[in-house]
Amino acid sequence: MIRPRAARATPDDRATFKSRSLPWLFLAPTMLILAVFSYLPAVQTLRLAAFRANIILGTEQFTGLGNFADLLSSPAYRQVALQTLIFAVLTVSIGLTLALILAWMASRVRRGQRYYHLLLIYPYALSPAIAGTLWLFLFNPEIGVVNQLLRSSFGIAPRWLDNPLLAFGLVTVAAIWKGLGYNIVFYLAALQNVPGDVLEAAEIDGASGAQKFWKVVFPLLTPMTFFLVFTSVVSALFDSFALTDVLTRGGPFYNHAGITTFLTYQLYQDGFVNFKTGAAAAQAALLLLLIAAITFLQFRVGEKQVHYGA
Amino acid sequence: MAPEDVARNDVRLLGAPAPSRPVSGTRHQSQWALHVTLCIAAFLIMAPLLFALIKSTQVSSDVLSARLVPGGAFFANLSSVWNEAHLGRYMLNSFFVTILVTVGKTVLSLFSALAFVYFRFPLRGLAFVLVLLSLMLPTEVLIIALFDLVSRDLNWADSYAAITVPFLASATGTFLFRQHFLSIPASLADAARIDGCGPLRFLTSILIPMSWNTIGALAVIQFVFVWDQYLWPLVIMQNDQKQVVQVGLRKLIDVGGQTNWGAVMAGALLTIVPPLLVFTLLQRQFTKGFALTQDK
Image 1 (cartoon, chains in turn green, cyan):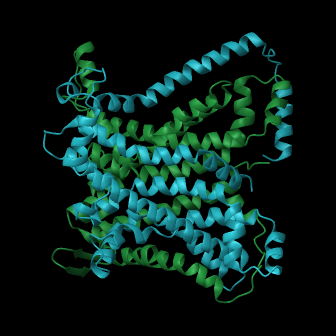
Image 2 (tube, rainbow over the protein chains, first blue to last red):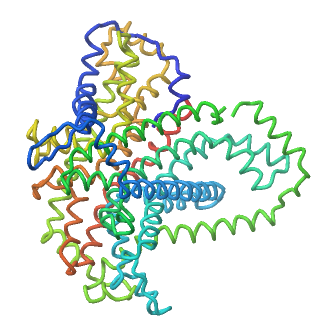
């Protein structure tokens, strides 16, 4: 929810109340919880990444950057990273395009707007785990409705969860579907803020629907698009865990690793299934670096490229 | 968009070969096309849920067939998942945890925003940056160290504290409330202070009544966020009695090939109801509260 412009443009000096201790008293609960449950584990993660540790045996051995070297030279980890990248690019680009088209259409309808809004944004209420559950049943090779219908009409029954390409596609489509509601909610909110007189002016000048969209609405929506790209990348990295854990369990195996094993899933596997704490902590450290890079990019590109509202 | 950009676009539009002015006939057609496309899209988006809804009403022999006619077994399915699979217990746990965390996040971030906006104190800027930077530290990434901390150092494993306390602070909430407070005229706070109003009374009798839209918007975001939590309860909560519904429901599918899918679908639908209800009830506040922070 960081919006760079808003953070800068506000006059934030009012200092109504004079007190030295009161502000810290009000801040204490938030700061204490963040210190203990966010910053301390972050530091601890970096420390653990430098050790080869085993939770079960309770052993720890200093390896410096050894864990990182192991990870980056591991074909399995590289494949997982590449899969995550492809998954993120696909879900973000297709997901946002669909959301924008649908939100734009829903905002141009004159009758029954409210109903369309409700119908389009309800998947927001679905959790990734529930979405995984629904799709697991729908695409179950034997008893799933999709294969029942395909079998009776075309005589085919694809192995959705065993074929690597199909499983990857299935998880990607499910993730796009799951994220659609959230993205449409925010696009609809942004579209409501597009000033009516600007659109009217374009209409009077004879702009067609497509021209109005590309030359007026789309530029005005760039801050929102930008914000949604950021949240969608983050959700592709982290929310995908519950979806893949329920739907595919990271499988099926392809080349060096499960085809739907993404970075967070690998981290969980190494940390809580294989008990390779050091390797898992090193992955966490790399993810922290990745988030930092994305955030930095968001601010840099955000300052240069984005048209902010009037 | 800056005014000059609008002007430039207008010039470009004028310079383009003049498109025919929309007449009411094509207007009508395009409205129809919009309705048809939106209906198809809405149907496709609804489809997985419609399937779940139909299957949850069928008796178990029909659930595994291609039959798409609703049956009358919804309550039988629901009661089997509610009683035998402890869904009721999981739902209650999720309710308790979600409401506690949502209320906690709201109260704590109201306090911290109050401190950031209405006080001047040393290190204020640094404190604010530290709160915001915590957005870059999601639970999923910290999970290894957080697990060690909560289960070994604090000895909180299998307690409600483990799935509530670490989430009580909110950077998003602090930021949203700060933005909202900054949009309230400073003179109001000065007047309140001159009338002898302390910061806490100022918060409860002036700021909060003026913040319902932001509180509503934040409540929706937080409720959905907490209700959906999966990875953390999965690793930290081994006591089935205190498990949340997202993880609990998965256990139903684990039972070999003998999954009672009709019951699972009924359970899945039930878990969607609370966030859907919160979202529908607070939809106006959500849009308004969010639109406000956008403008300011």
